[in-house]
Image (tube, rainbow, N blue to C red; front, side, top):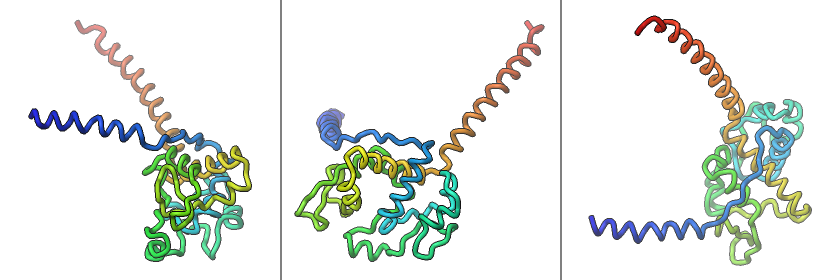
Length: 215
């Protein structure tokens, strides 16, 4: 037991130091109720991410939930012969992805839930030039990432504030894709809690009336 405690005393400070020296994540200023932001993020995702990354658990027609019509989706966001009812997949196979990048590009359907919105927001804003990597880019959050800086042209053309807004919108959309029914779920939860509160009031009143003559 003494040896175990001694080992734990050595490990815990090491883990704490590792956590303290890890990448500092900036809070992602996302808002799932901001439809304009979600639509902008969807456009960025389709134009810059969907070339390599799928979102196989998301269908194009679900984008009507963020204020787009099926005609707008078909004319502006669906390419390569896909249909509005199709899932957001890419033609590149995992085998091709591994051959080109060393690892298959991950599906982004649930990336915000696995990594977190803050991680994505910081990651997309911390690419830097590195001639030692195959892509010529590296990242302060994810060192030696296989993914190149796909938004570098966008970043070069925009001001820092504009680029931060573009990344914010993209992360906002990825968070929406991770759970499209989040807002509906929260709304239903509020209604359920309200109904339960009303039921509790009536149940308590009935209990008081039933037991008032019982001593």
